[in-house]
Length: 223
Length: 291
Image (cartoon, rainbow over all chains, first blue to last red; front, side, top):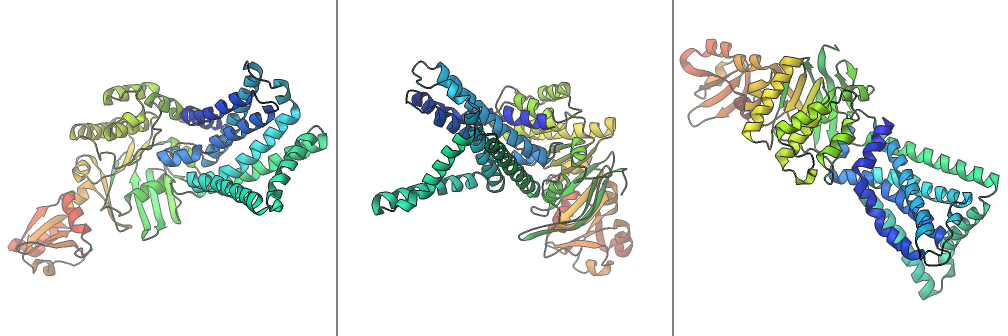
């Protein structure tokens, strides 16, 4: 049944997932910029996964959620398939960026850099974090939840910029700097077995908790 | 609870803001067509959604072929063909791609049946769903529901938006399913003539409460309309009077035993056979109904 649910999501939401194409235009441009490979690849996987998490919101819009819930498949299986689709979309986006880095004539990136274990693991960690946070949010609040969540981050970014540029508040950018330093440190550490194990454990736990929450929310939803 | 019933609802309750479905109980025997009728907002769709476990019941029990509709959800749904009042499919996908994606969920799915129905219904399988008219969308939903050899068909207002010719054809198909294959069918409708044509059991819901669930013969042969002057209602056993409506000259009353009314009133009133329309009208008037 999980296979059918996965197939259904990929068949019926293919056009929705193609929404990532504009991102690849930017990736194509960025291939001519030095040292952009990691950022574009991680970003593509991140965006691909995010795009897939919004399938639930699309189904609310099309009123197909009730049709799905009337099929002989549990809501748990439908939710689990959605997580798998998000990973597949993220992985596919990553592979496309690797191919672009290797094949585009104007690319100055080294594709080999993108298939290093630590870069792949960093991408997995960040995409998993995006999926773990977004999936329950979309299931509970739909597209409005996505817009509010991402909009709040945008506003926070603008507020931090204003605080830094106009009022000289260096501490305002502290959080963002800390996140950036954390990601860089994680990437550096991801060639050590202990860090790899810790990262994979954290990813597994976050996804397990997120999936449990999503199933709980989906099963309680009135359609 | 018996597996001889296609459907068995006991004390089912669900509350929304401003509406409560109150402890509804009724059964649908195997091999019959059941019709759910009632005014707008009476709870017909809520009952259907509860059976399909699209919404969570607060109390009661729902069994489909003897199986609990929640704990045996997958097994139950594999035996149900469902048509929603506003069918929800993927706008940007062709009918054929939706058939491929959704048919795979049913072990008993038949592509042959689907293609035969699609041809009979005139469905363009290479067209996108958004290009279809409302009637064609309902036909697609019907073709999907009828292509996996379901033992029970549940349809919410399936004939709304269909032209009279197709409506009649659909009802003929439903009757044939019943006679040839022993399937059970539950459908809600506002079009009472549809029910008079095919329904074996009629369940009336009003204001979230079950008013009655009777066989068509019990209702149409047993119940009656009494027309007479203002005093005739007072001469009847109050337990028999289900609804009263004033007319230009006298009153019109719905009674649950036409024979008893004839015996009680003699020639002082006219006692006529009842239609489902009469039942709907006389039992739906909140201020006037006597039941």
